[in-house]
Length: 255
Image 1: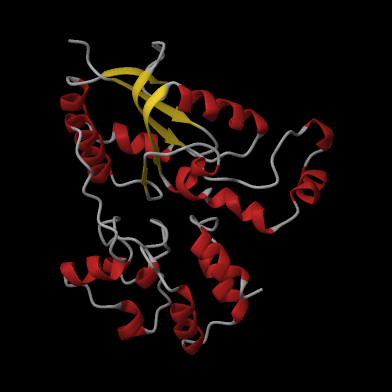
Image 2: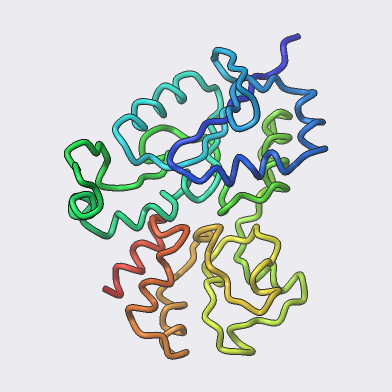
Protein backbone atom coordinates (compact mmCIF):
# COMPACT_ATOMS: atom_id res chain seq x y z
CA UNK A 1 0.00 0.00 0.00
CA UNK A 2 1.38 3.39 -1.02
CA UNK A 3 2.24 5.84 1.75
CA UNK A 4 0.34 9.16 1.91
CA UNK A 5 2.18 11.91 0.08
CA UNK A 6 3.19 15.02 2.06
CA UNK A 7 4.17 18.31 0.43
CA UNK A 8 5.45 21.43 2.19
CA UNK A 9 5.16 24.74 0.33
CA UNK A 10 6.70 28.17 0.92
CA UNK A 11 5.16 31.49 -0.05
CA UNK A 12 6.08 34.93 1.37
CA UNK A 13 7.66 34.08 4.72
CA UNK A 14 10.89 33.63 6.68
CA UNK A 15 10.93 29.78 6.63
CA UNK A 16 10.57 29.67 10.44
CA UNK A 17 7.56 27.34 10.42
CA UNK A 18 9.26 24.90 8.07
CA UNK A 19 12.25 24.92 10.42
CA UNK A 20 9.86 24.08 13.28
CA UNK A 21 9.01 20.91 11.37
CA UNK A 22 12.70 20.08 10.96
CA UNK A 23 13.21 20.80 14.67
CA UNK A 24 10.98 17.82 15.42
CA UNK A 25 14.08 15.67 14.70
CA UNK A 26 13.47 12.17 16.16
CA UNK A 27 9.69 12.56 16.01
CA UNK A 28 9.97 13.62 12.38
CA UNK A 29 11.86 10.41 11.61
CA UNK A 30 8.96 8.42 13.06
CA UNK A 31 6.50 10.35 10.89
CA UNK A 32 8.73 9.97 7.84
CA UNK A 33 8.32 6.23 8.17
CA UNK A 34 4.57 6.60 7.69
CA UNK A 35 4.49 9.11 4.86
CA UNK A 36 6.18 9.88 1.57
CA UNK A 37 7.76 13.35 1.76
CA UNK A 38 7.17 14.23 -1.87
CA UNK A 39 7.94 17.97 -1.87
CA UNK A 40 9.86 19.80 0.88
CA UNK A 41 12.59 22.02 -0.59
CA UNK A 42 13.76 23.17 2.85
CA UNK A 43 14.81 19.58 3.57
CA UNK A 44 15.48 17.89 0.24
CA UNK A 45 15.88 18.71 -3.45
CA UNK A 46 13.96 15.59 -4.44
CA UNK A 47 10.57 16.42 -5.92
CA UNK A 48 7.77 13.98 -6.66
CA UNK A 49 4.72 14.95 -8.66
CA UNK A 50 1.28 15.21 -7.08
CA UNK A 51 -1.47 14.82 -6.31
CA UNK A 52 -0.59 15.13 -2.62
CA UNK A 53 -2.56 13.74 0.30
CA UNK A 54 -1.46 16.53 2.67
CA UNK A 55 -0.03 19.92 1.84
CA UNK A 56 1.42 22.17 4.54
CA UNK A 57 1.60 25.77 3.36
CA UNK A 58 3.79 28.43 4.95
CA UNK A 59 3.71 32.09 3.94
CA UNK A 60 1.30 34.76 2.76
CA UNK A 61 0.05 35.76 -0.67
CA UNK A 62 1.78 38.99 -1.77
CA UNK A 63 2.18 38.77 -5.55
CA UNK A 64 0.04 37.80 -8.57
CA UNK A 65 2.35 34.81 -9.06
CA UNK A 66 1.58 33.66 -5.51
CA UNK A 67 -2.13 33.64 -6.39
CA UNK A 68 -1.50 31.37 -9.38
CA UNK A 69 0.76 29.03 -7.37
CA UNK A 70 -1.60 28.57 -4.42
CA UNK A 71 -4.48 27.69 -6.74
CA UNK A 72 -2.35 24.97 -8.34
CA UNK A 73 -1.33 23.69 -4.88
CA UNK A 74 -5.00 23.53 -3.86
CA UNK A 75 -5.92 21.62 -7.02
CA UNK A 76 -3.17 19.08 -6.32
CA UNK A 77 -3.91 18.60 -2.58
CA UNK A 78 -6.55 16.45 -0.89
CA UNK A 79 -5.96 18.26 2.43
CA UNK A 80 -4.45 21.74 2.60
CA UNK A 81 -3.25 23.03 5.97
CA UNK A 82 -1.83 26.49 6.55
CA UNK A 83 0.94 26.83 9.14
CA UNK A 84 2.07 30.02 10.85
CA UNK A 85 1.00 33.64 11.14
CA UNK A 86 1.97 34.48 7.55
CA UNK A 87 -0.25 31.78 6.07
CA UNK A 88 -3.15 32.24 8.50
CA UNK A 89 -3.19 36.05 8.84
CA UNK A 90 -0.78 37.63 6.35
CA UNK A 91 2.17 37.82 8.77
CA UNK A 92 4.28 40.80 9.76
CA UNK A 93 4.26 41.81 6.09
CA UNK A 94 0.55 42.58 6.41
CA UNK A 95 1.62 45.92 7.89
CA UNK A 96 1.54 46.97 4.22
CA UNK A 97 -2.25 46.60 4.40
CA UNK A 98 -2.44 49.82 6.41
CA UNK A 99 -0.33 51.92 4.03
CA UNK A 100 0.18 52.86 0.37
CA UNK A 101 2.31 50.12 -1.22
CA UNK A 102 2.90 52.15 -4.39
CA UNK A 103 4.40 54.94 -2.30
CA UNK A 104 6.75 52.45 -0.60
CA UNK A 105 7.93 50.95 -3.89
CA UNK A 106 8.55 54.41 -5.37
CA UNK A 107 10.71 55.34 -2.38
CA UNK A 108 12.64 52.08 -2.01
CA UNK A 109 13.22 50.90 -5.58
CA UNK A 110 15.11 52.72 -8.33
CA UNK A 111 12.77 51.17 -10.93
CA UNK A 112 9.42 50.52 -9.22
CA UNK A 113 7.88 49.70 -12.60
CA UNK A 114 9.60 46.31 -12.38
CA UNK A 115 7.93 45.44 -9.07
CA UNK A 116 4.93 43.15 -9.36
CA UNK A 117 3.12 43.04 -6.03
CA UNK A 118 -0.35 43.10 -4.52
CA UNK A 119 -1.61 45.99 -2.42
CA UNK A 120 -2.18 43.63 0.51
CA UNK A 121 -0.51 40.64 2.13
CA UNK A 122 -3.27 38.05 2.35
CA UNK A 123 -3.83 34.84 4.26
CA UNK A 124 -3.99 31.67 2.17
CA UNK A 125 -7.68 31.27 3.07
CA UNK A 126 -8.43 34.56 1.30
CA UNK A 127 -7.72 32.81 -2.01
CA UNK A 128 -8.41 29.07 -1.65
CA UNK A 129 -10.25 26.65 0.60
CA UNK A 130 -8.19 25.72 3.67
CA UNK A 131 -8.95 22.56 5.64
CA UNK A 132 -7.18 23.55 8.86
CA UNK A 133 -5.15 26.49 10.20
CA UNK A 134 -2.26 26.11 12.62
CA UNK A 135 -1.34 29.40 14.28
CA UNK A 136 1.95 30.75 15.59
CA UNK A 137 5.05 32.74 14.71
CA UNK A 138 6.52 30.22 14.45
CA UNK A 139 4.15 27.30 14.94
CA UNK A 140 4.60 25.03 17.94
CA UNK A 141 6.41 21.85 16.89
CA UNK A 142 4.26 19.91 19.36
CA UNK A 143 1.07 21.19 17.74
CA UNK A 144 2.55 20.51 14.31
CA UNK A 145 3.26 16.89 15.23
CA UNK A 146 -0.26 16.53 16.64
CA UNK A 147 -1.66 18.00 13.45
CA UNK A 148 0.20 15.64 11.13
CA UNK A 149 -0.48 12.60 13.31
CA UNK A 150 -4.19 13.41 13.59
CA UNK A 151 -4.53 14.04 9.87
CA UNK A 152 -2.90 10.71 9.05
CA UNK A 153 -5.24 8.99 11.52
CA UNK A 154 -8.29 10.72 10.06
CA UNK A 155 -9.25 12.52 13.26
CA UNK A 156 -9.58 16.20 14.20
CA UNK A 157 -6.35 17.64 15.66
CA UNK A 158 -6.41 18.71 19.30
CA UNK A 159 -5.32 22.35 19.20
CA UNK A 160 -6.69 24.42 22.12
CA UNK A 161 -8.40 27.70 21.20
CA UNK A 162 -8.37 29.16 24.73
CA UNK A 163 -6.51 32.37 25.57
CA UNK A 164 -2.87 32.70 26.53
CA UNK A 165 -4.12 33.60 30.04
CA UNK A 166 -5.28 30.02 30.51
CA UNK A 167 -1.81 28.79 29.66
CA UNK A 168 -0.32 31.19 32.21
CA UNK A 169 -2.70 30.02 34.92
CA UNK A 170 -1.98 26.35 34.26
CA UNK A 171 1.75 27.05 34.53
CA UNK A 172 1.34 29.07 37.74
CA UNK A 173 2.73 32.22 36.10
CA UNK A 174 1.81 35.46 37.84
CA UNK A 175 -0.14 37.79 35.53
CA UNK A 176 2.31 40.49 34.39
CA UNK A 177 -0.52 42.90 33.58
CA UNK A 178 -2.17 42.62 37.00
CA UNK A 179 1.00 42.40 39.09
CA UNK A 180 3.25 44.82 37.19
CA UNK A 181 1.00 46.82 34.89
CA UNK A 182 2.83 45.39 31.86
CA UNK A 183 0.83 45.66 28.61
CA UNK A 184 -0.06 42.16 27.41
CA UNK A 185 -2.10 40.72 24.53
CA UNK A 186 -2.61 37.46 26.42
CA UNK A 187 -6.35 37.93 27.10
CA UNK A 188 -7.13 38.13 23.36
CA UNK A 189 -4.44 35.74 22.04
CA UNK A 190 -4.78 32.01 21.40
CA UNK A 191 -2.56 29.82 23.56
CA UNK A 192 0.14 27.68 22.04
CA UNK A 193 3.59 29.18 22.67
CA UNK A 194 4.18 27.33 25.93
CA UNK A 195 3.81 30.48 28.03
CA UNK A 196 7.08 31.85 26.70
CA UNK A 197 7.03 35.63 27.27
CA UNK A 198 4.91 35.91 30.45
CA UNK A 199 7.06 33.26 32.15
CA UNK A 200 9.98 35.67 31.68
CA UNK A 201 8.11 38.69 32.99
CA UNK A 202 7.15 40.10 29.59
CA UNK A 203 3.72 40.71 28.09
CA UNK A 204 2.36 38.51 25.30
CA UNK A 205 2.98 39.81 21.77
CA UNK A 206 0.12 37.92 20.16
CA UNK A 207 2.22 35.45 18.16
CA UNK A 208 -0.64 32.93 17.90
CA UNK A 209 -3.24 35.44 16.76
CA UNK A 210 -6.74 36.12 18.08
CA UNK A 211 -8.40 33.50 20.23
CA UNK A 212 -12.01 32.51 19.79
CA UNK A 213 -14.29 35.52 20.53
CA UNK A 214 -11.36 37.73 21.68
CA UNK A 215 -13.16 41.06 22.50
CA UNK A 216 -10.16 43.38 21.83
CA UNK A 217 -12.08 46.60 22.72
CA UNK A 218 -12.28 45.46 26.36
CA UNK A 219 -8.53 44.86 26.47
CA UNK A 220 -7.84 48.18 24.73
CA UNK A 221 -9.79 50.01 27.41
CA UNK A 222 -7.59 48.45 30.08
CA UNK A 223 -4.43 49.23 28.12
CA UNK A 224 -5.51 52.85 28.05
CA UNK A 225 -5.97 52.72 31.82
CA UNK A 226 -2.36 51.49 32.06
CA UNK A 227 -1.27 54.70 30.34
CA UNK A 228 -0.91 53.62 26.72
CA UNK A 229 -1.68 56.36 24.19
CA UNK A 230 -4.14 55.58 21.40
CA UNK A 231 -1.32 55.27 18.85
CA UNK A 232 0.55 52.87 21.13
CA UNK A 233 -2.56 50.70 21.46
CA UNK A 234 -2.91 50.72 17.68
CA UNK A 235 0.67 49.58 17.17
CA UNK A 236 0.37 46.96 19.91
CA UNK A 237 -2.03 44.97 17.71
CA UNK A 238 0.13 45.42 14.60
CA UNK A 239 2.82 42.82 14.91
CA UNK A 240 2.98 39.20 13.75
CA UNK A 241 -0.80 38.96 13.28
CA UNK A 242 -1.53 42.53 12.21
CA UNK A 243 -3.67 41.24 9.34
CA UNK A 244 -5.92 39.03 11.48
CA UNK A 245 -9.39 40.58 11.09
CA UNK A 246 -10.02 41.05 14.83
CA UNK A 247 -6.64 42.69 15.43
CA UNK A 248 -6.79 44.76 12.23
CA UNK A 249 -10.23 46.12 13.06
CA UNK A 250 -9.24 47.06 16.60
CA UNK A 251 -5.97 48.70 15.57
CA UNK A 252 -7.74 50.75 12.91
CA UNK A 253 -10.20 52.03 15.50
CA UNK A 254 -7.26 53.74 17.23
CA UNK A 255 -6.07 55.66 14.17
